[in-house]
Length: 197
Image (tube, rainbow, N blue to C red; front, side, top):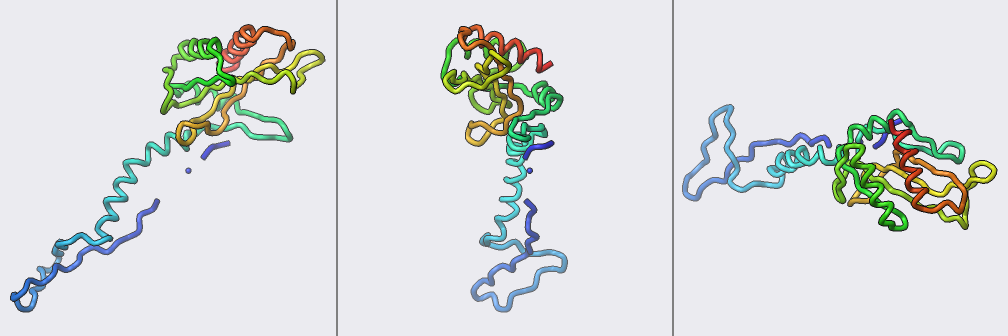
């Protein structure tokens, strides 16, 4: 599995300079040497544009082609490549943190998780996004005879303009519906650390 990926047009150079008034017939330039045009025509800008594109290319490669395997839908379920995720996580230097809905305790716990993983917390230009989601008990997902999925910790690649990109990993926590939320947060993070080794 893999995630997301300009060839410059060949341009002709050497536009003859404009003749000066009163200079008579224009002399031909020495062979093998082409005069530089007095006024740059549109074609002159092409090499500059291409050079700027080359400088910008690494930025897009970092954001869109990280070389990580993303999760996919298989027969109604989400499947993720754990080995590929562990490698991507190890190579990441910074992470952004989100909780849905916003939860101060959850943000703090995610911050401690990032520190334990050796990652810098960054709101912008982060290598990965950690998103802790509290699932609605009114629309439960059953896991076993009595347990329900109460929370999900999802890890995404960065998307455009700071949004979410492709999903790399999803950690679900299942328990009794009346489990206190701080306990759920603590347990899902502990579970995530064990699976991310």
